[in-house]
Amino acid sequence: LDRFCLGFEPQTQKRFTSTTPAIKVQTESKTTKAAKESRTFQAIQEERREQAERSVLISCPPKFNENKFLDYLSKHGTINKHFFYNTYGAYAVVEFSSRESIASLKESTNIPAVEHEAAVPFKSRLLSLKWPGSQSSNHPMPKFQNQSPPSINEITQLLSEKDSIDEQLQCLAEALQLTEENISLRFLVCSLLQDIAGAYFPECIIRPFGSTVNSFGKLGCDVDMILDLNGIYATSQKKGSGLSLEYQVKRGASERAVTQSILSVIGKCVDQFGPGCVGVQNILQARCPLVRFAHQPSGFQCDLTANNRVAMKSSELLFLYGHLDPRVRHLVFSVRCWARAHSITSSIPGAWITNFSLTVMVVFFLQQRNPPILPTLDRLKELAGPSDKCVIEGNDCTIVSDLSKITLQRNTDTSEKLLQEFFEFYGNFPFNKASINIRKGKEQTKPETTALYIQNPFETTLNVSKNVNATQLERFVALCRESAWLLHQKEILNRSSVSPWGFAALLLPSVTSGAGVKSRRKKKLEPASSRIKNLLDSLKIKGGETVAKKGSA
Ligand code: GTP
Ligand code: MG
Image 1 (cartoon, rainbow, N blue to C red):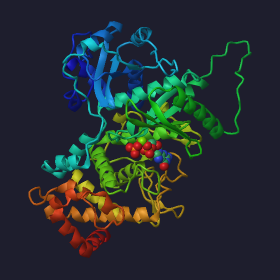
Image 2 (image 1 turned 45 degrees about the vertical axis):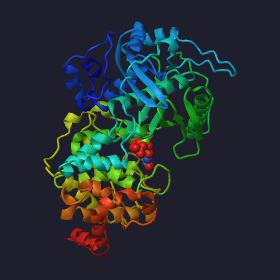
Image 3 (image 1 turned 120 degrees about the vertical axis):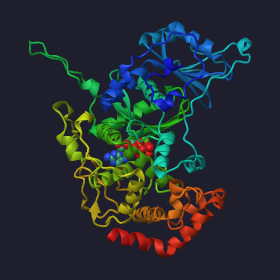
Image 4 (image 1 turned 60 degrees about the horizontal axis):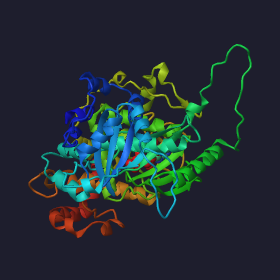
């Protein structure tokens, strides 16, 4: 079993496939894991991308024999890793150790003969396993890896069993975070898409960004992708004579117009040739033009953008912050979960605070601790080496890539304390006049009158939360105050006095944040929370005061 799991984190190793067939497998040396831990963001992404290029996604019939299946595939070469999952049917992700195996496998794979319709004969790496009916006897099914997040009820249950709020916050991050298998599947979907876009631009790379790679991804989150065409611009070496050739190219009115035109063609290809890609929408007039679609075999919602290098750099920045101290991820996951439970964030675009904005708010808060838990973005720039230099469209996006160059100050605050102080900090933040600036790690005077101003880390004249209106900000502030107040109550902090207790109690319906909350929550939770409801009732009278006084002290 372990042979398949090497390279995965301890908690995911345990959950790997149960039966190991007698096939050729490769092992990694013991030093690999340690070496991996000090690798840069780019190196990690590059390795995952390369693994995805050696992988296939196979739809499996309801009954099949895992050993026989792997045995059959291993005729094409050594299998490094594999796992199964279930969306609308069973699927296998199989990673070979060499790309030649994919070519060999494709050679022995047929285009299906369809009877009443016609098929686009596009040979992708999304395959179907045909299993002879006569051999479908009672084989045990393989173990399926879960790809969905736990429900709010399951989370509440899980957290209620913990002994401290710190343990709850850690447990929450572990329960919600992307598993190694899920990340592999995300990279594989990007790689499958790259095969389509590669028909026009063979040098292109489709890279995931956003929460797939920034270390704050939650199971079930969308896959943000960038069509990276930089490889095309690599100039060839000139050879002495002074002569050179140039490609004749079609010109567009602007970078944006060219991006829109490329995306519209790729979008059409995805729609018409992309197996498993459904519901393709070209959203080309957005500030950042994109093609949105669902990839059915993986169950992922995908957003494909192009010419969006700054967003990739933002993902690297968040990844870096997420890896500096475990408390960062514990806090980000808990704040995101809390915000979702109270409809502060939403999957529908609108005047809501986004997960990205919330994460930047957590980073800013952690920069404000005494001593600071996270360094400023300016500091990350100072620490950068010559190879880290990065300017994108005139914006200096340089940050240090080697985490070991960053020395952190000693701050021993517990996650519980940080969560409480986060709520107090934003429950009392002067949003009317100040902006949030993680580059300086200090609040600045707001340059415009939008409700919430969070300076874009790399495009410093932009506000990442321009969409947020005053009502949504007020709801956020009210909920911060309410949660801060709840965390001051002895009953909430005591496992034996209320259920759910601790962080789980903060996920219960609010009494102060108004519309939308009442209808969303099920009555089921209410009996267990009657004690808390009483507390909340009294909050109406004294809660605001308590927090306000504390904050102004
Ligand atoms: P999820 O909600 O889990 O999908 O989080 P996410 O971080 O992936 O957010 P989202 O899918 O909305 O956006 C993907 C990435 O685009 C983010 O991680 C940011 O890097 C970037 N991004 C999103 N919103 C903004 C914004 O308003 N301004 C800027 N500059 N970048 C943004
Ligand atoms: Mg996303």
